[in-house]
Length: 345
Image 1: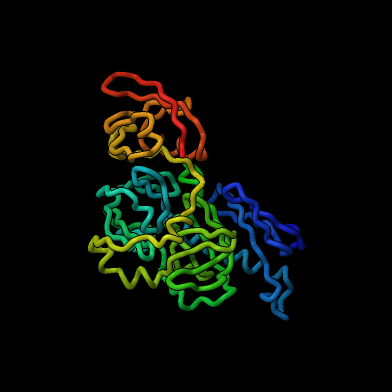
Image 2: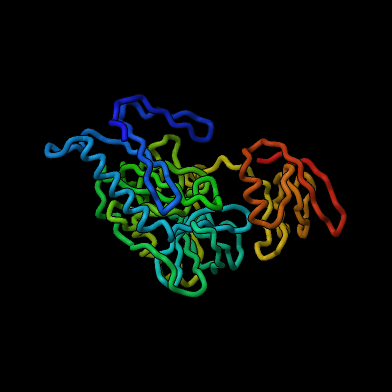
């Protein structure tokens, strides 16, 4: 591997370039599983370097810790399809309890479809959510599921390293959740603020300490690369019984609602995940779908030239685009085929 070097680093997110400044940067290829290599960017703070170890030795130690955390918890990081989009979650018990962000549970469906990194899927029952802190819980059917160990964010100190997993950009068959790392910058209310970068699809994913323990759940992003927000695990534990009972309460804070990782296009429909076709259940008023006259029970059979096989396929096809893209869509409405053009938002 190359020696770390000082450089001026930029990161582009949602079309905006963000400057890191002079940092030590080293690109580590963390080998996760037998076939998947996941890039992880490590930012080394000079204050972290002890007198006993060289910067390279410190960096090597951090790299090894991140690899252990990812390998230990990868199988429990899942993608959640709610009928309108895709988020992330993490299994925390053998009987299949999944913690996620409250805003990932955006539809009122009784069940969601959950995908594992190996491509397998299972159905999960909707339980409760607390939008005041952006926490949510669903539960897989059956038992003996891979799961993570719950830790404590109270033990974290400013500058401590953390590891982030999530299905960035949405679930992709054959790709394991990308691994990112960063440091705790501050604790603000019920949120951990880190520079472990989040993008669309990461919401609801897990944040770990270097012992591999769950300390937070991804919630939202700020205006800067260093403003990634995660709900503290203690908030979930405090509401545990209510979440398991299926209670839902609260309202997303305006700041969180505006800063939910985005950038992916939206059609404005919810879909029937149990149907063997991309069948529309609901059309949001004022959405792109509403403006072109889509209706409940319409079936999307083609989108932007791509033959659509089912609801998950349509969600992935739409999320390949960005807002303001114009796409052609073909609809089956009671055996009548309609060719339409839609401008996404």
